[in-house]
Length: 268
Image (cartoon, rainbow, N blue to C red):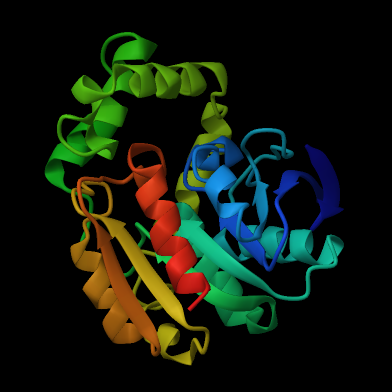
């Protein structure tokens, strides 16, 4: 673990492996721990750069609101501070918003792009499923109940029952590394700020020149995989891969299969 100062904050990051740089951008409420099951496999092919977004983990947690422009500037600042002139970029969920903003404002930094379990915002994307939304809004019971409900909709059906050890690991992480409520709301504002037709990415994505992989879990209820085809229509030089038997947190559900798909695309 190490820190750099960029865009006015200290950013906590780690480098693993060697080869072409691969930047991993985490989703809402997660730090770089989100990637811990895929980093070893990816590090056999790439120099993996994983970091905590503003508001999470060991990175500074200033008051919000946060915007996608702000978090993309954090990300660009990290790469610049590390002397990485160009990297493959993988953004998951909220991290996919950051990756879209990064490639549009700093295309010089992005080699190949992977947009995972994300959408382009605006009125034309496919929203969260009612089941997932209900689980995300239900704050009844104790903290453990809330966490378990969230994991149940983030993973494919039956995952929690089939892998109790991974469920326990996820629960322990969520309970041991909470994002402060104000900062969680500030991160949520990143996506909310993209809901308008004028602020979303939909009509800007044709400018992307990086070869792009659009990557989803088959059973994603948080960001339905129907968004994959919408992104593919908007982005030139893009391909879609849907990972079977996985949901929104595919990097924990099926890490080996995910590594294989990611490496195959990046090394093509």
